[in-house]
Image (tube, rainbow, N blue to C red; front, side, top):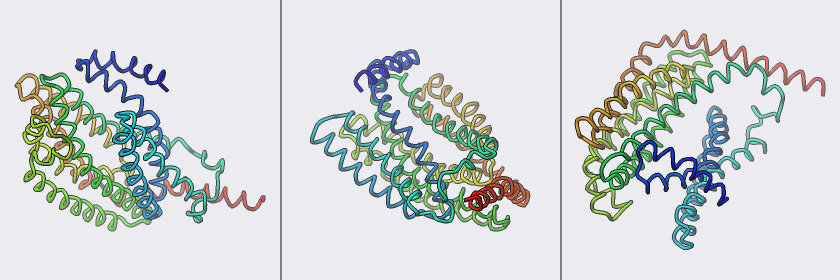
Length: 367
């Protein structure tokens, strides 16, 4: 394991140095990157099981496993980091264990009889007509990756600035808080995607439109409440993470941008969920490329480096990109012909579900 970590360090360290990152930041990031490999690998199975269960409204098992994972994560982190003083290795080890627990739990639930109507065991029919599924999966992956990389670029650009360590500490705190709130929005994203897909599959464009309105408005209300809360808290919330007065002051300076990020996050992920439910992932991927990488990042670089707004300038530019994306997704959702989407969805069902069901019946008759 030590050799693998050293190899990872040698791989990422020069890349980060080439991108202009400070030596301590590049060294630390190169070491931590190794620990993310098994953690990220778990997501391949996690999201597959999660969406499979959510499509059947079996959210309770996901919630129970998430609660168990969280409790064990806290306990292991306390033991490994505080009691055994293992530092980053302890923190990352506890995270890896916590991320794999829901995967193993969902696998046991599905294969152990928790989904008797939809799980009939492993079958070669799973490989039937894979290309349309792969195409949708690739477009979904592109859509999500472009969003995740967008926030990563914000940290990367910040690492090139003066007093980078304080700036990155403050930005990391803000992004952690933003990530907490984003978990709420992702819940609405999943609800929107599953609900819209189910309504389209059932042939009801009216119910699909109603579901979109309800989920977006509910998420927006939550976002507005959190927007006001974080405007009032400002830098005080940073004391949860640090005792450094310099970092707390930097967080207080960034808090208005954090509040606006939280507000936009209450709408944008939900609209992405609607796109997933309607099979419009490819279109959203193009929207993300344009708004994030042709609008947000160039504006952020201009405001941060050329005009001299530093971290705030980068974040403002990227917020503008997110705002443009939210507007475009809202317009696409408003202009979408949902009756036409019903026809397309039912065509997919006839192509995938009915042949698979016939194949299972044939297997049963042969047995």
